[in-house]
Length: 319
Length: 255
Ligand SMILES: Nc1ncnc2c1ncn2[C@@H]1O[C@H](COP(=O)(O)OP(=O)(O)OP(=O)(O)O)[C@@H](O)[C@H]1O
Ligand SMILES: [Mg+2]
Image (cartoon, rainbow over all chains, first blue to last red):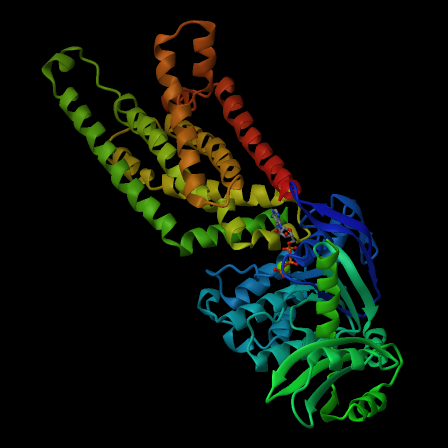
């Protein structure tokens, strides 16, 4: 449904998006992640034909964003970072206006307006002035108008920003529900959201693609290597941090040991295992045989959040 | 075509829900009423002057009331046009709603023409207030109505071209104040060019005077339609709209 090849976007001097490629299949929900200034909004603007790419190709719903912009625009629903609302309009009027702009046939415009307003839970504020709506309601009005023409592809830039937890859950449920008929790309900073609704994740950082994978692959990657929290204390007398660290590192299957903190005289470490290795028993044995106390040993799990931080941080280190 | 109308309607509506339209109308009614009063006062004074009476020819109301009033209205227009056009694009750029328009399946030119048309219609409805003054003339006198229509046509053409230029300037910035001030500066410049022309007889002087917006209105005020003037206004309108389209395109490239 969406095909991006070698996309590059340069603003006057700085490169906002640097040679990224990815593909999204029909009916998928894709999470588009990256720290601030990574180039998410810029990529979405290229996909919606708002900005032309400096280089590379992008295809949306089978049409090229550069040469067949009109066809793309007809098939894309876009919710920008700040919903593009006219404060002087009433909600119903606004959604209707967007419907007309997007070319919804007059005959079923009213029905569509009622339908999307109901779906996005804005039916109760239909006659309110947009200027008087709260941030969350504005977001939902933006979403309602983005789906008014029943687009094949939905591009949502931080659709849940500024929503309360209840509304966020509802919005996510709505997005998930929409996924059947629409292909959706959504950008967000809130990673648990991605974990719950996305089938695929694209992570970019500083304009570069750092990872693109299905949620399943990422999950198995998470299960593959384990992150353990280990707390070690001295049975008698004091305990040397370095000697514990080197002993833990020498356990077979451990890839990385990181000192975290001292609590009540106990030392806390993060231990990461290698792919597919189970190291808990070995760690316990090794600590106890050195005549230390093993006070805690539990999995911390490698969450999407950590993968995200690792990937985007290692990119920083490389630069 | 229908897209132009969709945008035009939306734009007109936002003019009329904000105080701009009413403020301008009140301002115009006041100023126009004042000039009308002044023109009538002079007319009355002169026509009762024994010297003038001796000539035995009644004073022409078209020449003495309507023409000066129309000339004044054309100058007042220069002050109102920046107020009308300043928000046209600058506001949409500031609030980000331009993103909605630019990602909808409509052409840039439809957006531009729709907005411009709304500005022209608003301008016309403001000018309509001056008809109240003229109605008084028609009730108490017998002026020729054809020159009046021609004068209104001239005002429309002049407004159209300045509004097109204003649209372009509004498209160049996110800041409404800058857009307004810039448009005002250009309107002022196109007006004062005429002053130079009065003293210059060289080719250069003639060229300058040809560029003057108000200079071309004089014929219309007299009730004369000169193709030269019509061509000037129409080509300047097209030029303004063309520049707006180019600026929209180039801003997208630079963004
Ligand atoms: N109009 C612009 N002119 C120049 N540079 C820009 C413009 N818009 C964005 N940039 C730059 O492009 C880069 C990417 O910005 P972008 O808005 O795409 O990031 P983002 O991933 O959406 O960030 P956020 O999470 O904060 O929304 C940034 O370095 C930014 O400074
Ligand atoms: Mg962004």
